[in-house]
Image (cartoon, rainbow, N blue to C red; front, side, top):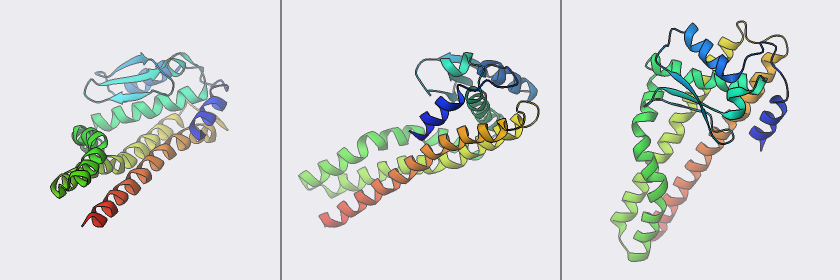
Amino acid sequence: MRVRSAFKKYSQVPSMARLSGAETARRILSEQGIYDVAVEETGGSLSDHYDPSSKVVRLSSDNFHGHHLAGLAVAAHEVGHAIQHANGYLPLNLRHAILPVANLGSSLGFPMVIGGMLFGFTGLIDIGILFFAGAVIFQLVTLPVEFNASSRAMAILSQGYLAGDEVSSAKKVLNAAAMTYVAAAATAVMQLVHLLLMRGSDD
């Protein structure tokens, strides 16, 4: 709700730079000497992301075409990930490496634990917990990746892209988005604790 509220508010505020999200992303990439990353439009709302496997910054339609502060901030943030990738930023590489395990853990962890408890297979419970722990590690590694991308974005935007109060407004958009990752990480940790408690009670 906080992200959507911040985005809705600042997507109504035109940026003084008069750049669309796509123009912002391409200009920053060029300034950073990154020429092998494409900028594409993607469907959905707040579906913006950087795909390191394809080297593509994908921006939702509103941010891709819009000339507003929210789009400017989001585009710069996603380019921040591309800069991380180009610089070999370790947490980003680690997150990408453990993504397959995290996907398995988030989808199979709980079912394996429940199945193990129902059929009395403690080994299955332990495997399920290990799988889910991979998903938790992914969420925790995501935090420095996202905060660092936002820091890079604000440093770049503050040098000619934003004026006056626009700096604090862009920060509000990115801070709201960052809190979703904090909430996701906290939820994942609590779920892991729940699984460990369930494992303990099954002994």
